[in-house]
Image 1 (tube, rainbow, N blue to C red):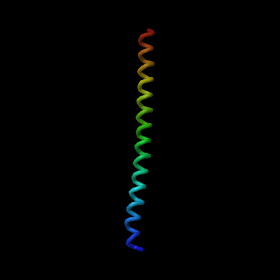
Image 2 (cartoon, rainbow, N blue to C red; image 1 turned 120 degrees about the vertical axis):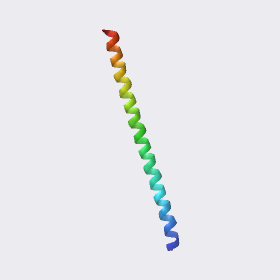
Image 3 (cartoon, rainbow, N blue to C red; image 1 turned 45 degrees about the vertical axis):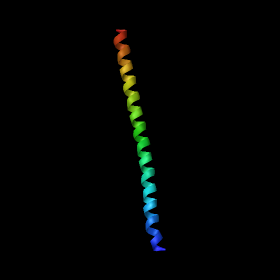
Image 4 (spheres, rainbow, N blue to C red; image 1 turned 60 degrees about the vertical axis):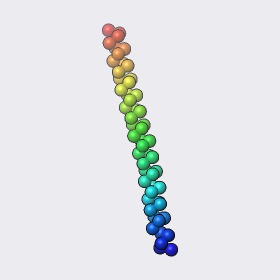
Length: 53
């Protein structure tokens, strides 16, 4: 039984790491998207103000 335990533990750790990696990637992507959106909105507002003046 103990010889099955080690590969199983390694497999479980691998799965956890993959899930953590995916969650991290998703969070990073959302953060980058939000930052890009904020930047574009800010730039757009600035441009509109410049054109309006």
